Length: 493
Picture 1 (cartoon, one colour):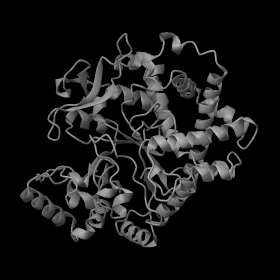
Picture 2: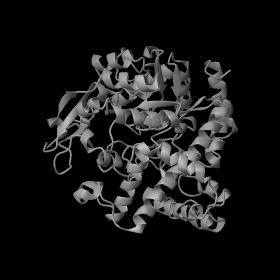
Picture 3: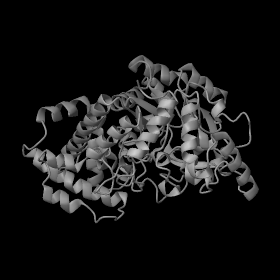
Picture 4: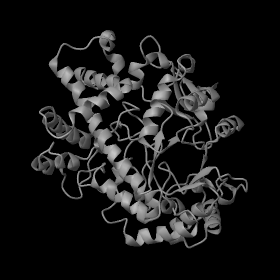
Protein backbone atom coordinates (compact mmCIF):
# COMPACT_ATOMS: atom_id res chain seq x y z
CA UNK A 1 0.00 0.00 0.00
CA UNK A 2 1.33 3.38 -0.98
CA UNK A 3 1.50 5.96 1.83
CA UNK A 4 -0.82 8.26 -0.15
CA UNK A 5 -3.51 5.57 0.31
CA UNK A 6 -3.56 5.97 4.08
CA UNK A 7 -6.65 7.65 5.58
CA UNK A 8 -6.19 11.42 5.57
CA UNK A 9 -8.00 14.63 6.35
CA UNK A 10 -5.94 16.56 3.78
CA UNK A 11 -6.74 14.51 0.68
CA UNK A 12 -3.78 12.14 0.49
CA UNK A 13 -2.02 10.01 3.07
CA UNK A 14 1.40 11.10 4.30
CA UNK A 15 4.26 10.24 6.66
CA UNK A 16 2.45 11.48 9.74
CA UNK A 17 0.59 9.73 12.58
CA UNK A 18 -1.49 7.50 10.27
CA UNK A 19 1.68 5.97 8.78
CA UNK A 20 2.94 5.09 12.26
CA UNK A 21 -0.49 3.67 13.10
CA UNK A 22 -0.39 1.50 9.98
CA UNK A 23 2.98 0.11 11.07
CA UNK A 24 1.35 -0.83 14.39
CA UNK A 25 -1.49 -2.53 12.50
CA UNK A 26 0.93 -4.48 10.34
CA UNK A 27 2.87 -5.65 13.39
CA UNK A 28 -0.36 -6.66 15.17
CA UNK A 29 -1.33 -8.64 12.05
CA UNK A 30 1.94 -10.60 12.08
CA UNK A 31 3.37 -8.80 9.04
CA UNK A 32 7.08 -8.09 8.58
CA UNK A 33 7.11 -5.96 5.41
CA UNK A 34 5.40 -2.90 3.98
CA UNK A 35 5.82 -2.53 0.22
CA UNK A 36 4.98 0.67 -1.60
CA UNK A 37 5.28 2.43 -4.96
CA UNK A 38 8.11 4.88 -5.76
CA UNK A 39 8.07 7.78 -3.28
CA UNK A 40 9.52 10.35 -5.68
CA UNK A 41 7.57 13.42 -6.91
CA UNK A 42 4.73 12.54 -9.30
CA UNK A 43 3.46 14.00 -12.55
CA UNK A 44 0.18 15.90 -12.84
CA UNK A 45 -1.81 12.66 -12.91
CA UNK A 46 -0.26 11.51 -9.65
CA UNK A 47 1.80 8.75 -11.27
CA UNK A 48 4.88 7.88 -9.19
CA UNK A 49 6.42 6.35 -12.34
CA UNK A 50 6.73 9.74 -14.09
CA UNK A 51 8.84 11.95 -11.87
CA UNK A 52 10.92 15.12 -11.97
CA UNK A 53 13.60 13.26 -9.99
CA UNK A 54 14.34 9.63 -9.23
CA UNK A 55 16.22 10.73 -6.09
CA UNK A 56 13.86 13.25 -4.49
CA UNK A 57 11.05 12.54 -2.08
CA UNK A 58 7.46 13.48 -2.90
CA UNK A 59 6.56 16.69 -1.00
CA UNK A 60 2.94 15.50 -0.95
CA UNK A 61 4.04 12.85 1.56
CA UNK A 62 5.35 15.40 4.05
CA UNK A 63 3.16 15.43 7.16
CA UNK A 64 1.82 18.91 7.82
CA UNK A 65 0.58 17.74 11.22
CA UNK A 66 4.15 16.96 12.20
CA UNK A 67 5.32 20.38 11.00
CA UNK A 68 2.60 22.01 13.10
CA UNK A 69 3.70 20.03 16.16
CA UNK A 70 7.23 21.34 15.59
CA UNK A 71 6.06 24.94 15.42
CA UNK A 72 6.73 25.43 11.72
CA UNK A 73 3.02 25.79 10.85
CA UNK A 74 0.16 27.46 12.66
CA UNK A 75 -2.88 25.33 13.59
CA UNK A 76 -5.08 27.90 11.83
CA UNK A 77 -3.23 27.58 8.52
CA UNK A 78 -3.34 23.81 8.79
CA UNK A 79 -7.08 23.85 9.49
CA UNK A 80 -7.74 25.98 6.42
CA UNK A 81 -5.90 23.39 4.32
CA UNK A 82 -8.27 20.54 5.12
CA UNK A 83 -10.86 19.94 2.38
CA UNK A 84 -14.55 19.39 3.24
CA UNK A 85 -15.33 15.88 4.48
CA UNK A 86 -15.80 13.39 1.66
CA UNK A 87 -14.50 15.68 -1.05
CA UNK A 88 -12.09 14.13 -3.55
CA UNK A 89 -9.21 16.35 -4.68
CA UNK A 90 -6.87 15.96 -7.62
CA UNK A 91 -3.10 15.41 -7.18
CA UNK A 92 -2.28 18.81 -8.71
CA UNK A 93 -4.64 20.63 -6.35
CA UNK A 94 -3.32 18.71 -3.36
CA UNK A 95 0.30 19.50 -4.25
CA UNK A 96 -0.41 23.20 -4.77
CA UNK A 97 -2.07 23.46 -1.37
CA UNK A 98 0.71 21.40 0.23
CA UNK A 99 3.49 23.53 -1.22
CA UNK A 100 1.77 26.73 -0.12
CA UNK A 101 1.98 25.55 3.47
CA UNK A 102 5.50 24.16 3.00
CA UNK A 103 6.52 27.64 1.85
CA UNK A 104 5.11 29.02 5.12
CA UNK A 105 7.07 26.38 7.03
CA UNK A 106 10.22 27.33 5.11
CA UNK A 107 9.79 30.97 6.14
CA UNK A 108 9.41 29.92 9.77
CA UNK A 109 12.46 27.69 9.49
CA UNK A 110 14.50 30.44 7.82
CA UNK A 111 13.66 32.69 10.74
CA UNK A 112 15.09 30.22 13.22
CA UNK A 113 12.04 28.10 14.04
CA UNK A 114 11.75 24.36 14.51
CA UNK A 115 14.27 22.15 12.78
CA UNK A 116 17.97 21.87 13.54
CA UNK A 117 20.16 24.06 11.30
CA UNK A 118 23.18 21.78 11.68
CA UNK A 119 21.17 18.75 10.55
CA UNK A 120 19.89 20.74 7.56
CA UNK A 121 23.44 21.69 6.55
CA UNK A 122 24.66 18.10 6.95
CA UNK A 123 21.81 16.83 4.79
CA UNK A 124 22.55 19.28 1.98
CA UNK A 125 26.22 18.33 2.01
CA UNK A 126 25.68 14.56 2.18
CA UNK A 127 23.12 14.57 -0.62
CA UNK A 128 24.80 17.18 -2.82
CA UNK A 129 25.43 14.61 -5.59
CA UNK A 130 21.77 14.82 -6.63
CA UNK A 131 20.20 17.54 -4.48
CA UNK A 132 22.16 20.45 -5.96
CA UNK A 133 21.04 19.57 -9.49
CA UNK A 134 17.45 18.92 -8.44
CA UNK A 135 17.15 22.20 -6.52
CA UNK A 136 18.49 24.16 -9.51
CA UNK A 137 16.20 22.26 -11.86
CA UNK A 138 13.15 23.15 -9.76
CA UNK A 139 14.23 26.80 -9.52
CA UNK A 140 14.79 27.01 -13.28
CA UNK A 141 11.41 25.39 -13.88
CA UNK A 142 9.79 28.22 -11.93
CA UNK A 143 11.92 30.84 -13.66
CA UNK A 144 10.90 29.61 -17.11
CA UNK A 145 7.20 29.25 -16.37
CA UNK A 146 7.15 25.49 -15.95
CA UNK A 147 8.25 24.77 -19.53
CA UNK A 148 10.15 21.59 -20.42
CA UNK A 149 13.89 21.90 -19.85
CA UNK A 150 14.83 21.38 -23.50
CA UNK A 151 12.88 24.55 -24.30
CA UNK A 152 15.03 26.66 -21.93
CA UNK A 153 17.90 28.79 -23.25
CA UNK A 154 20.91 26.63 -23.98
CA UNK A 155 23.07 28.38 -21.39
CA UNK A 156 20.53 27.82 -18.60
CA UNK A 157 22.43 24.80 -17.34
CA UNK A 158 25.50 26.95 -16.65
CA UNK A 159 24.14 30.42 -15.85
CA UNK A 160 21.52 31.19 -13.20
CA UNK A 161 19.03 34.06 -13.52
CA UNK A 162 20.10 37.25 -11.74
CA UNK A 163 17.17 37.20 -9.34
CA UNK A 164 17.13 36.88 -5.52
CA UNK A 165 14.02 34.73 -5.83
CA UNK A 166 16.06 32.12 -7.72
CA UNK A 167 18.44 31.48 -4.81
CA UNK A 168 15.49 31.40 -2.42
CA UNK A 169 13.78 28.78 -4.60
CA UNK A 170 16.91 26.64 -4.43
CA UNK A 171 16.98 26.85 -0.64
CA UNK A 172 13.26 26.07 -0.47
CA UNK A 173 13.66 22.83 -2.44
CA UNK A 174 16.59 21.81 -0.25
CA UNK A 175 14.47 22.51 2.84
CA UNK A 176 11.56 20.51 1.40
CA UNK A 177 13.79 17.52 0.79
CA UNK A 178 15.37 17.84 4.23
CA UNK A 179 11.93 17.70 5.87
CA UNK A 180 10.96 14.67 3.75
CA UNK A 181 14.23 12.94 4.67
CA UNK A 182 13.76 13.61 8.37
CA UNK A 183 10.16 12.40 8.45
CA UNK A 184 11.02 9.35 6.35
CA UNK A 185 13.90 8.38 8.65
CA UNK A 186 11.60 8.65 11.68
CA UNK A 187 9.05 6.33 10.07
CA UNK A 188 11.68 3.82 8.96
CA UNK A 189 13.25 3.70 12.41
CA UNK A 190 9.86 3.26 14.05
CA UNK A 191 8.96 0.45 11.63
CA UNK A 192 12.26 -1.29 12.34
CA UNK A 193 11.49 -1.17 16.05
CA UNK A 194 8.22 -2.96 15.31
CA UNK A 195 9.91 -5.59 13.14
CA UNK A 196 8.57 -4.15 9.88
CA UNK A 197 10.87 -3.55 6.91
CA UNK A 198 10.11 -1.19 4.02
CA UNK A 199 10.18 -2.34 0.39
CA UNK A 200 10.54 0.35 -2.26
CA UNK A 201 10.27 0.43 -6.04
CA UNK A 202 12.85 1.58 -8.60
CA UNK A 203 11.49 2.20 -12.11
CA UNK A 204 14.15 1.29 -14.65
CA UNK A 205 13.59 4.43 -16.73
CA UNK A 206 13.29 8.10 -15.81
CA UNK A 207 11.18 10.89 -17.31
CA UNK A 208 12.60 13.07 -20.09
CA UNK A 209 11.49 16.25 -18.32
CA UNK A 210 13.43 15.50 -15.17
CA UNK A 211 16.47 16.74 -13.29
CA UNK A 212 18.00 13.32 -13.96
CA UNK A 213 18.15 13.82 -17.74
CA UNK A 214 18.72 17.60 -17.63
CA UNK A 215 21.77 17.26 -15.38
CA UNK A 216 23.28 14.23 -17.16
CA UNK A 217 22.34 14.56 -20.82
CA UNK A 218 25.41 12.58 -21.90
CA UNK A 219 24.01 9.47 -20.18
CA UNK A 220 20.92 9.40 -22.42
CA UNK A 221 20.29 8.99 -26.14
CA UNK A 222 19.43 12.59 -27.11
CA UNK A 223 19.87 14.55 -30.32
CA UNK A 224 21.24 18.10 -30.75
CA UNK A 225 17.85 19.57 -29.85
CA UNK A 226 18.04 17.64 -26.55
CA UNK A 227 15.19 15.35 -27.52
CA UNK A 228 15.35 11.51 -27.49
CA UNK A 229 16.56 9.77 -30.62
CA UNK A 230 14.69 6.68 -29.44
CA UNK A 231 12.18 5.82 -26.74
CA UNK A 232 11.60 2.97 -24.32
CA UNK A 233 8.61 0.69 -24.74
CA UNK A 234 7.49 -2.86 -25.36
CA UNK A 235 6.92 -4.94 -28.50
CA UNK A 236 3.51 -6.22 -29.61
CA UNK A 237 2.16 -9.01 -27.45
CA UNK A 238 -1.06 -10.83 -26.59
CA UNK A 239 -2.42 -7.79 -24.77
CA UNK A 240 -1.40 -5.01 -27.16
CA UNK A 241 -1.03 -5.74 -30.85
CA UNK A 242 0.74 -2.43 -31.53
CA UNK A 243 3.17 -2.63 -28.61
CA UNK A 244 3.67 0.09 -26.00
CA UNK A 245 5.33 3.51 -26.23
CA UNK A 246 6.36 4.67 -22.75
CA UNK A 247 7.84 8.04 -23.68
CA UNK A 248 11.03 7.59 -21.65
CA UNK A 249 14.42 8.36 -23.17
CA UNK A 250 16.83 5.44 -23.43
CA UNK A 251 20.08 5.23 -21.54
CA UNK A 252 23.33 5.51 -23.42
CA UNK A 253 24.66 2.37 -21.77
CA UNK A 254 28.13 2.82 -23.26
CA UNK A 255 28.40 6.18 -21.48
CA UNK A 256 27.28 4.60 -18.21
CA UNK A 257 29.85 1.85 -18.66
CA UNK A 258 32.60 4.41 -19.27
CA UNK A 259 31.76 6.00 -15.88
CA UNK A 260 31.55 2.59 -14.19
CA UNK A 261 27.83 3.17 -13.64
CA UNK A 262 28.46 6.02 -11.19
CA UNK A 263 24.95 7.49 -11.67
CA UNK A 264 23.35 4.11 -10.98
CA UNK A 265 25.54 3.63 -7.92
CA UNK A 266 24.34 6.94 -6.52
CA UNK A 267 20.72 6.11 -7.36
CA UNK A 268 20.93 2.73 -5.68
CA UNK A 269 22.80 4.10 -2.66
CA UNK A 270 20.04 6.64 -1.98
CA UNK A 271 17.37 3.96 -2.23
CA UNK A 272 19.07 1.27 -0.15
CA UNK A 273 19.38 3.87 2.60
CA UNK A 274 15.70 4.75 2.27
CA UNK A 275 14.42 1.15 2.08
CA UNK A 276 15.28 -2.29 3.42
CA UNK A 277 14.60 -3.96 0.06
CA UNK A 278 13.72 -2.81 -3.46
CA UNK A 279 11.56 -4.03 -6.33
CA UNK A 280 13.53 -3.43 -9.54
CA UNK A 281 10.95 -2.54 -12.17
CA UNK A 282 11.17 -4.00 -15.72
CA UNK A 283 14.15 -6.20 -14.95
CA UNK A 284 14.05 -7.51 -18.52
CA UNK A 285 15.41 -4.13 -19.67
CA UNK A 286 18.79 -4.85 -18.12
CA UNK A 287 19.17 -7.93 -20.31
CA UNK A 288 17.57 -6.47 -23.44
CA UNK A 289 15.31 -3.52 -24.15
CA UNK A 290 12.83 -2.46 -26.81
CA UNK A 291 14.02 0.70 -28.58
CA UNK A 292 11.50 2.71 -30.62
CA UNK A 293 13.02 5.25 -33.07
CA UNK A 294 11.79 8.79 -32.47
CA UNK A 295 10.31 8.95 -35.98
CA UNK A 296 8.59 5.55 -35.75
CA UNK A 297 4.88 5.51 -36.54
CA UNK A 298 4.17 2.71 -34.09
CA UNK A 299 5.87 0.98 -31.13
CA UNK A 300 5.94 -2.19 -33.22
CA UNK A 301 8.54 -0.47 -35.42
CA UNK A 302 11.05 -0.77 -32.59
CA UNK A 303 13.75 -3.40 -32.18
CA UNK A 304 15.49 -5.29 -29.39
CA UNK A 305 18.86 -4.06 -28.19
CA UNK A 306 21.27 -5.59 -25.73
CA UNK A 307 21.20 -4.19 -22.18
CA UNK A 308 24.12 -3.72 -19.78
CA UNK A 309 23.69 -7.23 -18.38
CA UNK A 310 26.08 -8.45 -15.71
CA UNK A 311 28.28 -5.35 -15.88
CA UNK A 312 25.87 -3.04 -14.07
CA UNK A 313 25.03 -5.46 -11.26
CA UNK A 314 28.68 -6.40 -10.76
CA UNK A 315 29.53 -2.69 -10.45
CA UNK A 316 26.68 -2.13 -7.99
CA UNK A 317 27.67 -5.14 -5.88
CA UNK A 318 31.27 -3.99 -5.79
CA UNK A 319 30.14 -0.60 -4.50
CA UNK A 320 27.24 -1.56 -2.21
CA UNK A 321 27.61 -5.25 -1.41
CA UNK A 322 24.80 -7.79 -1.79
CA UNK A 323 21.84 -6.11 -3.46
CA UNK A 324 18.47 -6.30 -1.63
CA UNK A 325 16.55 -6.46 -4.91
CA UNK A 326 13.39 -8.19 -6.13
CA UNK A 327 13.50 -8.69 -9.91
CA UNK A 328 10.24 -7.65 -11.57
CA UNK A 329 10.53 -10.29 -14.28
CA UNK A 330 6.87 -10.41 -15.36
CA UNK A 331 5.87 -10.75 -18.99
CA UNK A 332 7.48 -12.55 -21.90
CA UNK A 333 10.99 -13.10 -20.61
CA UNK A 334 13.56 -15.48 -22.03
CA UNK A 335 16.54 -17.48 -20.86
CA UNK A 336 18.76 -14.37 -20.97
CA UNK A 337 16.61 -12.65 -18.33
CA UNK A 338 16.47 -15.77 -16.16
CA UNK A 339 20.24 -16.21 -16.41
CA UNK A 340 20.93 -12.60 -15.39
CA UNK A 341 18.48 -12.82 -12.49
CA UNK A 342 19.91 -16.12 -11.26
CA UNK A 343 23.53 -15.00 -11.70
CA UNK A 344 22.96 -12.53 -8.84
CA UNK A 345 20.51 -14.69 -6.89
CA UNK A 346 17.65 -12.22 -7.18
CA UNK A 347 14.15 -13.44 -6.26
CA UNK A 348 11.60 -13.30 -9.05
CA UNK A 349 7.95 -12.23 -8.92
CA UNK A 350 4.87 -14.42 -9.17
CA UNK A 351 1.29 -13.13 -9.37
CA UNK A 352 -1.63 -15.45 -8.64
CA UNK A 353 -3.97 -13.54 -10.95
CA UNK A 354 -1.71 -14.54 -13.86
CA UNK A 355 -2.00 -18.27 -13.17
CA UNK A 356 -4.97 -19.11 -15.38
CA UNK A 357 -3.98 -19.27 -19.03
CA UNK A 358 -4.81 -22.99 -19.10
CA UNK A 359 -1.20 -24.22 -19.04
CA UNK A 360 -0.16 -26.66 -16.30
CA UNK A 361 3.35 -25.18 -16.56
CA UNK A 362 2.17 -21.65 -15.82
CA UNK A 363 4.87 -20.26 -13.45
CA UNK A 364 2.26 -18.36 -11.42
CA UNK A 365 0.31 -21.43 -10.33
CA UNK A 366 0.94 -21.91 -6.60
CA UNK A 367 2.54 -25.34 -6.97
CA UNK A 368 4.96 -24.00 -9.62
CA UNK A 369 6.27 -21.10 -7.53
CA UNK A 370 9.91 -21.59 -6.44
CA UNK A 371 11.34 -20.68 -3.06
CA UNK A 372 13.46 -17.81 -4.36
CA UNK A 373 10.44 -15.73 -5.31
CA UNK A 374 8.01 -13.13 -4.01
CA UNK A 375 4.39 -14.10 -4.56
CA UNK A 376 1.57 -11.58 -4.87
CA UNK A 377 -2.18 -12.03 -5.15
CA UNK A 378 -2.00 -9.00 -7.47
CA UNK A 379 0.05 -5.84 -8.02
CA UNK A 380 -0.77 -2.15 -8.33
CA UNK A 381 -1.42 -2.72 -12.06
CA UNK A 382 -3.95 -5.49 -11.42
CA UNK A 383 -7.58 -5.27 -10.38
CA UNK A 384 -8.24 -6.36 -6.82
CA UNK A 385 -8.75 -10.09 -6.18
CA UNK A 386 -12.51 -9.58 -5.85
CA UNK A 387 -12.68 -7.35 -8.92
CA UNK A 388 -10.59 -9.79 -10.96
CA UNK A 389 -12.55 -12.87 -9.96
CA UNK A 390 -15.98 -11.34 -10.49
CA UNK A 391 -15.20 -10.02 -13.94
CA UNK A 392 -14.03 -6.46 -13.41
CA UNK A 393 -10.90 -7.07 -15.48
CA UNK A 394 -10.63 -9.62 -18.33
CA UNK A 395 -6.82 -9.76 -18.23
CA UNK A 396 -5.41 -13.24 -18.84
CA UNK A 397 -8.87 -14.65 -19.49
CA UNK A 398 -10.77 -15.50 -22.60
CA UNK A 399 -13.35 -12.77 -23.03
CA UNK A 400 -16.08 -15.18 -24.02
CA UNK A 401 -18.62 -16.06 -21.32
CA UNK A 402 -17.62 -19.73 -21.57
CA UNK A 403 -13.92 -18.94 -21.22
CA UNK A 404 -14.59 -16.69 -18.26
CA UNK A 405 -16.61 -19.41 -16.53
CA UNK A 406 -13.83 -21.97 -17.08
CA UNK A 407 -11.16 -19.64 -15.68
CA UNK A 408 -13.32 -18.81 -12.68
CA UNK A 409 -14.00 -22.46 -11.93
CA UNK A 410 -10.29 -23.24 -12.28
CA UNK A 411 -9.44 -20.46 -9.82
CA UNK A 412 -11.93 -21.83 -7.30
CA UNK A 413 -10.47 -25.33 -7.61
CA UNK A 414 -6.97 -23.96 -7.16
CA UNK A 415 -7.65 -21.64 -4.25
CA UNK A 416 -10.65 -23.30 -2.61
CA UNK A 417 -13.26 -21.43 -0.60
CA UNK A 418 -16.33 -19.60 -1.82
CA UNK A 419 -16.62 -16.83 -4.45
CA UNK A 420 -17.47 -14.15 -1.89
CA UNK A 421 -14.33 -15.08 0.08
CA UNK A 422 -11.98 -15.49 -2.87
CA UNK A 423 -9.60 -12.79 -1.58
CA UNK A 424 -8.90 -14.74 1.60
CA UNK A 425 -8.54 -17.95 -0.39
CA UNK A 426 -5.91 -16.30 -2.59
CA UNK A 427 -4.11 -14.84 0.43
CA UNK A 428 -4.00 -18.31 1.99
CA UNK A 429 -2.65 -19.81 -1.26
CA UNK A 430 0.07 -17.15 -1.46
CA UNK A 431 1.12 -17.77 2.13
CA UNK A 432 1.14 -21.56 1.73
CA UNK A 433 3.31 -21.42 -1.40
CA UNK A 434 7.06 -22.08 -1.31
CA UNK A 435 7.86 -18.44 -2.06
CA UNK A 436 10.23 -16.90 0.47
CA UNK A 437 8.00 -13.84 0.73
CA UNK A 438 4.27 -13.27 0.26
CA UNK A 439 2.99 -9.72 -0.35
CA UNK A 440 -0.72 -8.89 -0.27
CA UNK A 441 -2.24 -5.61 -1.52
CA UNK A 442 -4.13 -3.89 1.28
CA UNK A 443 -7.22 -3.81 -0.96
CA UNK A 444 -7.22 -7.63 -1.02
CA UNK A 445 -6.87 -7.85 2.76
CA UNK A 446 -9.92 -5.54 2.95
CA UNK A 447 -11.85 -7.56 0.33
CA UNK A 448 -12.50 -4.57 -1.94
CA UNK A 449 -13.86 -4.79 -5.45
CA UNK A 450 -12.54 -2.85 -8.43
CA UNK A 451 -13.41 0.43 -6.70
CA UNK A 452 -10.16 -0.18 -4.82
CA UNK A 453 -8.00 -0.52 -7.91
CA UNK A 454 -4.86 1.63 -7.84
CA UNK A 455 -3.91 1.76 -11.53
CA UNK A 456 -5.39 0.85 -14.91
CA UNK A 457 -2.47 0.56 -17.36
CA UNK A 458 -3.12 2.44 -20.57
CA UNK A 459 -5.81 4.62 -18.98
CA UNK A 460 -4.32 8.10 -18.45
CA UNK A 461 -6.71 9.44 -15.81
CA UNK A 462 -8.35 8.33 -12.59
CA UNK A 463 -5.39 6.37 -11.20
CA UNK A 464 -3.27 6.54 -8.03
CA UNK A 465 -5.99 8.10 -5.86
CA UNK A 466 -7.38 5.17 -3.86
CA UNK A 467 -7.46 5.80 -0.12
CA UNK A 468 -8.26 3.38 2.68
CA UNK A 469 -11.41 4.29 4.58
CA UNK A 470 -10.97 5.32 8.20
CA UNK A 471 -11.35 2.27 10.44
CA UNK A 472 -11.36 -0.23 7.56
CA UNK A 473 -8.28 -2.04 8.89
CA UNK A 474 -9.89 -3.16 12.13
CA UNK A 475 -9.35 -5.74 14.87
CA UNK A 476 -11.23 -8.44 12.97
CA UNK A 477 -8.98 -7.94 9.92
CA UNK A 478 -5.88 -8.04 12.11
CA UNK A 479 -6.94 -11.23 13.89
CA UNK A 480 -7.75 -13.09 10.67
CA UNK A 481 -4.57 -12.03 8.93
CA UNK A 482 -2.48 -12.88 12.00
CA UNK A 483 -4.05 -16.34 12.27
CA UNK A 484 -3.45 -17.09 8.59
CA UNK A 485 0.14 -15.85 8.82
CA UNK A 486 0.82 -18.00 11.88
CA UNK A 487 -0.72 -21.13 10.34
CA UNK A 488 1.41 -20.75 7.23
CA UNK A 489 4.57 -20.49 9.30
CA UNK A 490 5.28 -16.95 8.10
CA UNK A 491 4.70 -15.05 11.34
CA UNK A 492 7.80 -13.56 13.00
CA UNK A 493 9.03 -15.36 16.09
